[in-house]
Image (cartoon, one colour):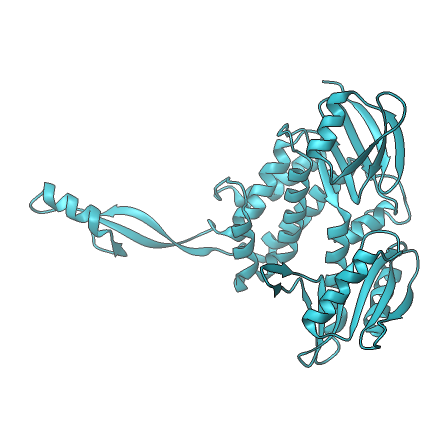
Length: 382
C-alpha cells in the first residue's frame, strides 16, 4: 500500500487536507501525538505535532514528525551516540535505525563482558532422587506401580532464561519484525543477538523490566535496558492499529526528564552528601504524586525539579504543580526546567517568602561538551 506522507515539525502547526478516516484515526488513536483543529474550509485541518519525534501510520497517511533541535542533539537526549556533529538532517534510516544501531552496540558491549545466567528450576524425570521431589506426581506414579523406578523432580539449573536476557531478546525480535530498517542495520541486530538464541522469544513486560533493573548482578545491562525500553515504548506508541509497519515514536518530554536525571545524578556523585532521586512517590489522599527529581543534602530535601519539554513560559498549572510538591516534600526551593539554546535562570518567590520558584533553561543545542557544562551549571545553581 502506497501511503501519502505528511511531514510535521514538533510544536509547529501545518494546514493540510485530510479524509474523514484519517481525522477519526488521529482523534481516536493519536490525540497525544498530533493535535487536530478544524478550519472553516471543508476537510482542511490544522495539525500540530506535540512533543514526539518519529512517525506513525494512519489508515492511508504516514505522519512523519521531525524535531525542532538538530538530530545529533536528539541522539544526545536519548542517550544514543550521535554519528555526526552539527548536521540537522535526519540520520540515514531514520530514528528507528539510529536506535536499533545503538541497541546493537550496547548488546555487543554486554556480550563482551559476559551474559549473566540466572538460577532456575527445570522439571525432569530421573532414575535418581535429586533436586526437589514433585510429591503429587510421585504419589500418582506410586499408585500405578508397586515399586516406582523413576522420580519426578525439579532440578536446579543455571541458564540465560532471565528477565535481563529476555528483554533484549524481545527487543531484537521486535526490531527484526518491523519493515523499513536498512539491511545493514538488520544484519547488525541479527549478529548481536546470536548469543541470545537460547533465550525464549516472548514479549517483554513491565515485570521483566522491574526484575532486570533490580538484579544486582545485571548492573552492566542497565544502559542496554534503557535503550530497550525506549525502543519498545516507541514501537508500541506508534502502532495503535497493530500493523507492525515499522513506525516508531519517541516522547521527547520523557527523554528530557531522563536526560536531566542522569546528568544531575552524575554531577552530584562528586558532591559529598548530595543525592538525586528520580520520580519518588508521595501520597495525597488516594492520589500519588511523582515529581521528576528530588534533590537532598545529607537526607534533607533541598530542591524539587520538574522538567517541561516546551517553551520556557510557565503556565499557572505548572506553578501550581511545583508548589504542591513543595508542600508535600517540605522543600523551600522548587524549579521548572525547560529546554533552551543557552542557560538561563529566573526566580519567583511566594508572597510569604517561604518558597523560591526557579525557572531555568537547560541548554540542549550544541556540542556534547557544551551540553555537559550546562548540566554542571544547573547542578551548581542548586
